[in-house]
Amino acid sequence: MKAQALFAALALIAACGGERVAEDGPPPLYKYNAMKEAVTDARDTLPVFWEALESGNAAYSDFALNVATKSDRYTEEHVWLVDIRHVDGEHFAGAVPKDHEIRDGLAPGDRIAFLPEQISDWRFREDGKFRGAYTTRAMMNLAPDAKIDNIRAMFHDSPVP
Image 1 (cartoon, rainbow, N blue to C red):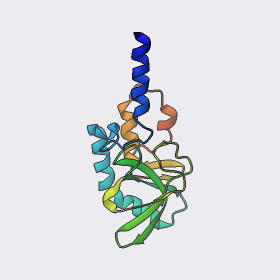
Image 2: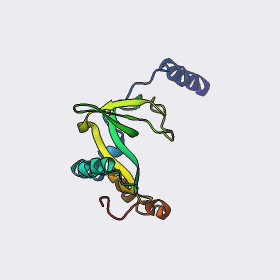
Image 3: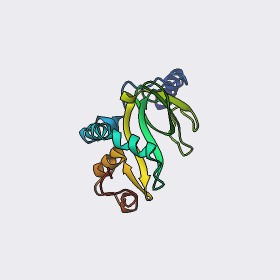
């Protein structure tokens, strides 16, 4: 009897097929109030990112935007993009970074077009430490007991200069 139940369960799993359907909405993490507030704060301070990007300041590097886009996992996936380019009007594009390891159907180097309202976060390094990264800061605060002092040390105390 147990063998028949196991066989039936395995047959049901196999019948589900290999094609994955994206879950509606954002990843569960983005449903926390702290993450929603982080996205709001990042959007409110986005002019800081654009100003730094265009400044030519040698102390600034590693510019990236976190953008909501579709993926194989979610209808609203949040992915960091680098090599940000203004395409025309309100349109921008960025590349999925080389270190992207999430299995979401996006590959390093993929170019993604986006509009300003799709931006959920921003970051850049100033003298080696990150500015911005509001959602990353929120994630760290969601795990206050985690031993992540080495990661926290990579960030300026304030997200803005």
